[in-house]
Length: 272
Image (cartoon, rainbow, N blue to C red; front, side, top):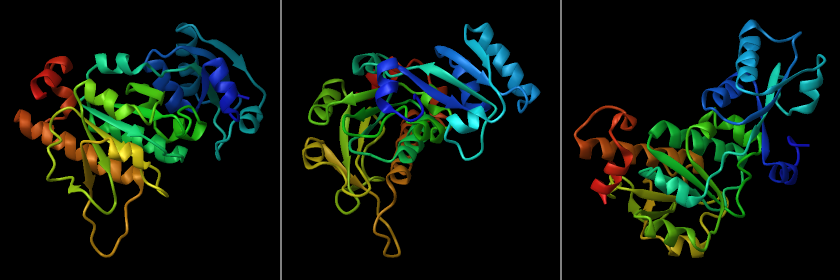
């Protein structure tokens, strides 16, 4: 039920992770792992070592018959280990307490693969958080979880935020809010993204809802060559996230990864 039904995941406040990498990320992050399921006939020694680590952390381990996980989970290649994990999302005020300098806001993004890729890009760019507005994809959709490649465990995430209020809420927390558009707005390389910024991303089919875009402080676009109409939302987001990271490093006079900087609260206070 947790794999196929969003309502069941929301009611139980649990979601499913599949495969050694994702289960390993949940263990490393100290997530609340409820149950680990293992097909011992197909598991490698590395899988079994991971299961033992999850058990030491408090998870219940259940051995299943060969083929069961393949029938229950929806991966193309069945995995020998899976787990149910407690929900990770936090309140907006809790995320703000961590002071991420970049916040990606998903307003109408419907594809779980895109959402997972955005999570992955935010984590890779560093010093980021993610807000998923109501009416967007389910954070705990199995495809979102898989596509995040473990990033779901490495960035603070807010879900079910108000599309109508999120820009003003983030502005009140000290962020400059940027809408995105494939056809109009300031070039992303010309905008000042070195401080605390929130970047609003909409659906590939329809873009940002007008009310959301209109509440932003400015609009960004990516100049494209060769008659290309637009980038996919996940690719466009990644381009802007890494530009923001580049500008932060340039402003700080460093060449290293932004996560190597010091206290995040001091960083955001200095950038404001």
